[in-house]
Image (tube, rainbow, N blue to C red):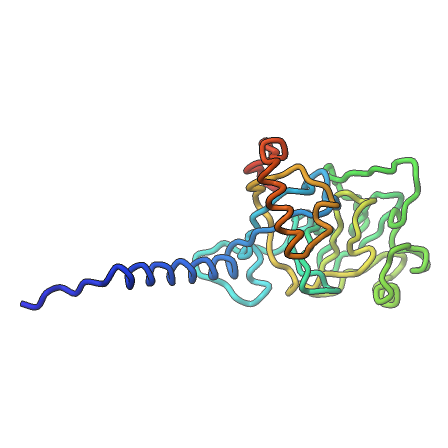
Length: 248
C-alpha cells in the first residue's frame, strides 16, 4: 500500500499564505473597504479621525455584478455613501445622498426641498447661523454667485435647472455634507454618476482625535509620522466611545 501523500511544511505554509492573500484581495475588492475621515464636512455624524468599514456590496447592482447570497438594495435618499470623486476618480469622498435620479431640488435659506417637500434632516449641522453663506440658496440665479463652484459645473448647471429647481438626471445622484457650511459637495462640483458609487459605510471600527492639518501631508513620510504619532499618543487620542459605533 502506498504511503499517504504528505505536504512539506514549506508547501503547506505557502499555500495557506496564497489563500489568505487571495481572500484579502477579494474582500477589499468586492466586500469591505477601510476608509478614514480627513475633513469635517460630515460633522457631527462623522468626525475627522474616524476610521470606517465600507460595505462595497451594498450597492453592487450599480456595477452590474452581483454575488449570490448577498443582499443588495437601491441607493436611498439619506444614505451616507463613499464614492470616487467625479473630478478626480483617484480620490474617494464621503457624503449623504440628497437627490435621486429624477428628483427636483432647491435650497431656500438652508432648507432643502426635494420635489417640493422640505427634508427632515436632524443630522445637519449649521455653524454660521447669523451669516449668509455660499450654498445657502440653490440653484443660484447666476452660477457666478455661488463662490467655490468649479468652472465645469458653472457651465453645466444651467442645463439641469427648470423653474428654479435642479433636476437630477438619470443615472446620477446629488450629495451633500452634513456640515453644510463646511462642505464642498454637489452644489459646487456637480452630480455623482451611479458607477462612481463605491459603497456604504456601516461602522466606525476605531476613532482618533485628529485635526484636518494632521492629514494635509499625504506623502509616505507624512503617513509614517501620523502612524508613529498615533502610537505615541494612543491613550489620549483614542475616542473610546466611537469605537464600533454604527454609522447612520
